Length: 297
Picture (cartoon, helix red, strand yellow):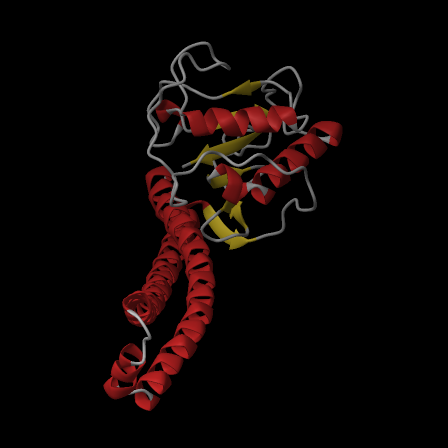
């Protein structure tokens, strides 16, 4: 089940990042189209003036201008001026053609981004259905969960194109368990939570292979109790702490590359965007009633 959850949400988050990057590129390209169209309008005007002038003028008039020169110096000056005008006209026409091609290229690029976005939306819809199937194994029914406002996290680093970089488990040792490792993105999410005031006991890496993200340094468990994981379901201020922490990760999911959050018999996935029932096995640890679980890309 955990492997299916990971695969579905991982693919969704990656497709979402590609979509966001594409929309940003489309916005930039559209601005380029608008600017190029304005320049093209000016170039068209200049080209039209050249055409009108060429229509009204003849080589005879040019020759006449040269023949009417009173002396050799005047002849040279007029010849140079005529040659300069011709050169300027040629440059303006070439500029017009260049602007027209740039506009066509920019429009084609916008069309390509729109097509890419359609593909990513279809991929996200597919992964959402995969996530629904995966969580159905542990309950899966829609349910209510914590929500509300929260602090804004600093976004985790992305590639220049907006996608999420591939990361290894390179933060060694894991600062919470003093062994193993974390990915930089997981550690970033942990530190952002601490900066937002969530400083209860936390444990991230563990070596036991369970099909999840802990052995890969991509998950953390945040205790509801300040001192550690208690073998009882959180209540009172501890329950409120868990509610607020889960809400924090959900509200900042796109900034922190959150795959899913599990808390108090419920699971929230980026792929579905809502809370679903979660039955982990009965005890506080398995049902995540004593800690908030976070998995990141």
